[in-house]
Image 1 (cartoon, rainbow, N blue to C red):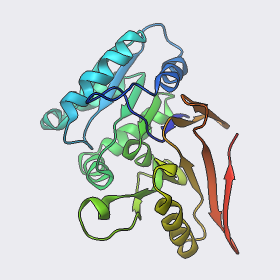
Image 2 (cartoon, rainbow, N blue to C red; image 1 turned 90 degrees about the horizontal axis):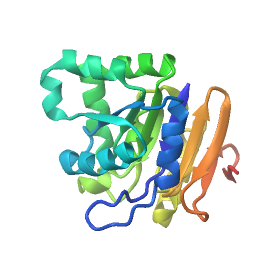
Image 3 (spheres, helix red, strand yellow; image 1 turned 120 degrees about the horizontal axis):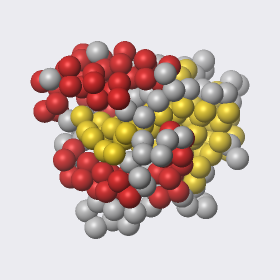
Length: 232
């Protein structure tokens, strides 16, 4: 198993700074190939083409061959399957978690991705893309759709029996909503990551990769009280 779960961070899109360099370098190292095939899945974002343009340049500069799967590619599932099988690194971008997970399940890409994980392909994801790999995520889907002001539990693909909480320190309310969710679902354990922090999982070894020194990664659970422990 090779997973890189990224909490967030700007990639230099729309006049933002490029913040995730150390993490991106580590993703490429995990492939252990001289010129790995990098595949970007942009199904969660409504700006998939511009998103790919930036990420493509980043990973080309890191020595990768690059390709993508977008909504247009889904009309040719044989192409999708071929791209996934040939990839050394699969990176799922951020956006709408519920939309992303539904598409992955409806198209059968969830099974393709699980097979890639079992075959030691590096699976990376940022924000919604990281949530997709785990059993659950804490998502802003209801906030985005003006349903409520709360971060809520959403389903992922369950490759790992955890909840993923991206952009953890960006909004104080996220911690409060996570506590409420875990109180009602005290069998769930969560990984909570700040922007510019990533959790690298390689077989049974877990480590934290940071592209900013003050970014943090936590493990959260609820027994008699809310427990939040920093992963160092």
